[in-house]
Length: 198
Image 1 (cartoon, rainbow, N blue to C red):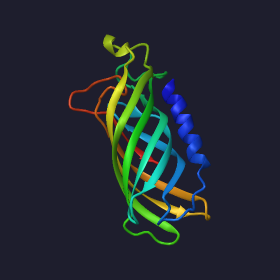
Image 2: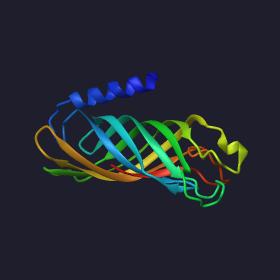
Image 3: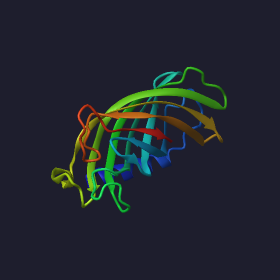
């Protein structure tokens, strides 16, 4: 519950920042991201999302770092562990995720109106499995897992200047996780991860 209050606080702080929308000498800027997720797991991907608030601190003209926290849902469709196999019906596996991460951003070619960049980072993510199929053929699969894992996001993006106080940030990438339990099902030598478009 405390993490949810912290998320709301960071989102409100991010929205209230009105720093100049420039690519050099800005000091601190913040924002809110909507991120569409594409889960990579043993199962088929379902609609998944992440909302993330962040603060960005300038190091120099080409480097900065983000501190962010988010909330989202990682959803997949178990189409082969339910009985009868491949039958129509609800076989969703739904997991709440709360990532907290730090990202280093490198912007090698900033210009007046747009700023391409790439990023890499690390962090922790809390996960809580909320829904599993009720008719699984695997008894231990019906338990609902929760815990913490390491995450490693990487990607590319660009900021586009909309006005003196507003930037549009478009980015894409992938996040590697250190667990195979996000969808509550384990296949040896496979780790649950996801691609993202924000």
